[in-house]
Amino acid sequence: MAEKCNPYENMLCNLDAAAQKLGYSLDEYISLRYPERELIVSVPVKMDDGSVKVFKGYRVQHSSSRGPCKGGIRYHQDVDLDEVRALAAWMTWKCAVVNIPYGGAKGGIQVDPTQLSLGELERLTRRYTSMILPILGPEKDIPAPDVNTNAQVMGWIMDTYSMFKGYAVPGVVTGKPLEVGGSLGRPEATGRGVMFTVVELAKRLGWDLKGLKIAVQGFGNVGSVAAKLLKDKGCKIVAISDVSCGLYNPDGIDIDRVLEYKADSPNCLIKGYTEEGISTITNKQLLTMDVDVLIPSALENQIDAEIARELKAKVVVEAANGPTTTEGDKILNERNIPVVPDILANAGGVVVSYFEWVQNNQMFMWDEEKINSMLERVMIEAFDGVWSMHQREKVTLRMAAYMVALDRVIKAKKIRGIFP
Ligand code: NAD
Image (cartoon, rainbow, N blue to C red):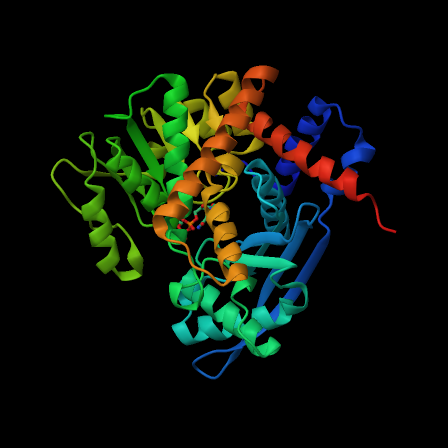
């Protein structure tokens, strides 16, 4: 993408604008412009060939005003401090928008995990965990999966932390395998939350879900589940993509068959999948396709100024974190294309992470039906809150979500005051 953006600067623009709109003075929110704590670690790993490589790792805690810090860990070659900072702050707003008692954090390692063996990945994860361990804990900071990390990685983090403590501490991390205290419904939770968001949006816009044309960029944990659940609701998923290619079928892609194909393909990619009527498309073609709903579910900065000018979707639902640049967002607003922001649309994951942590603290497991119905309730309430703010204040959905979130965080900060 041509436009070079600093994701943390993007976040600050939204923060300042929302605070001003709410009428708060700079003194009342200035500390939220800075992360509370940042840890940078150099993580040595013995590789399979006997050599030693050192990877850069981060953990940033943006705010703990409303509760323990919460946020995923990302493994990607482009991870840097500004990205992790932005992602940490977004977690603060996300937890506040859905009103769960957490602050925000994020972690990451600058690494291309596809170049590592399973053993190297485990050693990297365990060493990184041991190096950020002083700031982790079920009452302090609770990681979860993000791009290129999964339940197994969370299992290693849980085990490493537990070995240091001398007893099992399942509540230190969420998104774990079921066998070690994970929650039913957690792997699908973010995609399920995206589905609830589209359903709520369709209700407000008076749209029928049947035949609604949808394009989904990114077919990982979030995008593939959102596509599957929306297809099950009767929507037509006409385009999907991952890092390997994009696929288009005007009659709707058979998402169940793609999922089966992906499960057996090397590196879990969709490249090579065929069905009648399908053709391959570029990333840009997918993002600018004439559809009802565009769901970016890959990485940030995908909808920049150029894409925003050419985008033809009627609405954008941000399943990824930060997929729209500040410039891109401005253009979409000028073109009256509504954007359901990431901090609302993809909050389903952290909501069920919260349920997982509560179950760990209670030493009790809930059934999946209960989890999914509680997730639905939380997502609908959050959507209602943001939609009302959007209508009442005549602001974009993004601004409305920031305003709902910021108001809650600032109020919590005020009540707690500044120590000492
Ligand atoms: P993932 O690694 O499972 O999937 C990412 C997908 O994006 C993969 O299909 C990958 O091939 C694809 N991709 C990467 N680069 C691409 C490109 N240039 N063009 C097209 N596709 C590309 O990750 P995920 O967990 O699904 O996360 C996706 C996004 O959702 C991220 O922004 C993440 O921060 C956000 N998110 C994830 C969760 C969660 O619970 N996993 C929760 C909230 C937000």
